[in-house]
Length: 203
Image 1 (cartoon, one colour):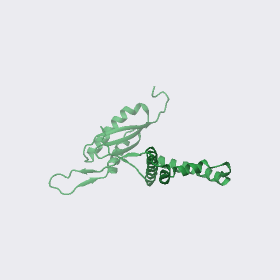
Image 2 (tube, rainbow, N blue to C red):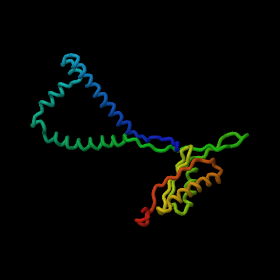
Image 3 (cartoon, helix red, strand yellow):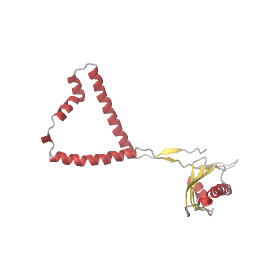
């Protein structure tokens, strides 16, 4: 079973979106408190001073057709799409985008030696990619080292070659790790695609 560390990419837009969510939540809590106060019998004038709900209602109720001028229509027509784009973009940025964390590998120095030798993740991945690409049926390979295991994603030329190619890639990558003096790692091979030359190949 894969034991991969998962991280989430975040940007400054995520913080802006969260700040807006906090502000809206506080507003909802505040006016929820106004409703509670009204339910407890607090005078409406006092509640209106705290929340201004009645003043806002009276203002909106007093609007007439003459108040909707061409300037108001233009501002509304421009602000609507802008608000849709801005808030839609912020909402899209809130979607989590997890990715597998890349780790490094500390090599065994043996007894009587001091210090450590650390092999970067991309070096291990490069060894796996070269070994996987040596298989004739593989047209593309990508390695991902997670600190405790190695995953190799491959693209195979032909559908009938998939089972044999996956087994061969796993064998080649395992042998390459041993040949380069690297510790034995669990090697998982994932198929990312294949070229279907004939429509009947999967039948």
